Amino acid sequence: SMESPPIEEQRYLFNQSHVATLNNLWRTSKTSQLRFNANYLNDHVSQNKSVKSEHFLPDSTIQIDETDAILKRTERFEGGVNYTDNATNFYLENALKWKLRKENSNALSSVNGNSLLQRYELPYYSIENKLDFLKRWDTKLLNIGTQFIYAQQPKHLAVEINGERSTQEIDLSNFYSKTETYYSWAWQKSRLLLKANAEIASNSISTLLSDAELPDSISSKLHINDFMLELTPVYTYKLRKWELKWSVPIKEQIFVKKDREENNTATYNYFFINTNANLSYTFSPYLSSELSYKYQNNVSDYTDFINTYIMRDYRSFTKPSGTLSKRESQSYAVSFHYKNPFSVVFANAQLSYVPSARNKMIA
Image 1 (cartoon, helix red, strand yellow):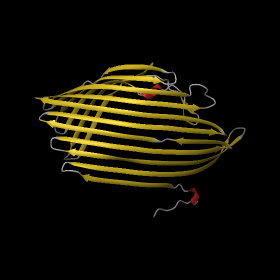
Image 2 (tube, rainbow, N blue to C red):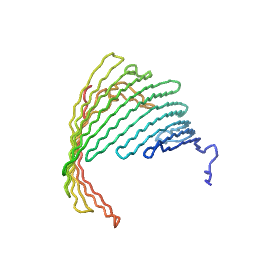
Image 3 (cartoon, rainbow, N blue to C red):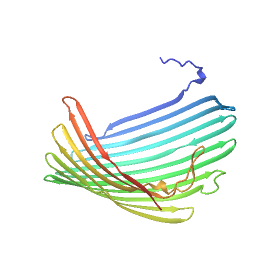
Image 4 (cartoon, one colour):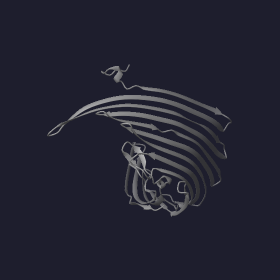
């Protein structure tokens, strides 16, 4: 058995945790099955700390008496239902998942009689469904995938210093939908793959900061819709020792921002063309090399539209600029790969150069 530490029992740090899990699998036919999974966690942690220190200065001595009392509680209930059908002429999988989380934290600190109390409430709720369908005939291949996610993330932070109270309320709700498909065919030594991807997101952001020292820019109510359409042709040419792969993602992205406090709406449109090229050569069954180049540019996500003060922690305030940032990067790389399964020797070497840039775009 585990030995007890050489301190009083009241000084132990014990977690009060409870865990429950349920799993089941049903075979619905010769090629299909249904799986169910659910798990629950209840974790409760309490901690007390006391520190006394003295700082000797040339002309005086400073004594600091600090105590901390921390209480954390976490509850999680997660699970999913998965259906799979692996037939001879197609493959189908549908996965439904949910997440329910609740995290609370109370921290009371005292330094030489000055008290600081911080309370966090960080719940998170989401439900997700993902569908994948794959069908193949001859040298042709068709794939269709869809994904839907709804999430809600209210956040509450309260800071109290010697009776003076500050609070931060944040309410985030997100709906995200993604549909992707690809179709490919091959002839002689070539293969062409066409990938299409469409994404739709609807995001609501509400923030409210109550603090005596920040009289302005303390609240915001934004609703942002994000539409993205991407088409990527991928060409592959393969010889006995050489292989060339080249892709050109073409993306159109539109943001529609509605400011409910100022009662105005604005639309932002961005068009990007990226590229990715790989050339590989096989010297022997054990040694191969690869040259690659990648160019990519994109914009940041909807959270950059926030332009109000947000309290992250005690004495920690941030105020985003409310503008989107554009990121551009390139990558040059050469690599060598050696593997010998008979002598169990594996080696990889890579040299890369990745210049990047980022700027702010007024939104």
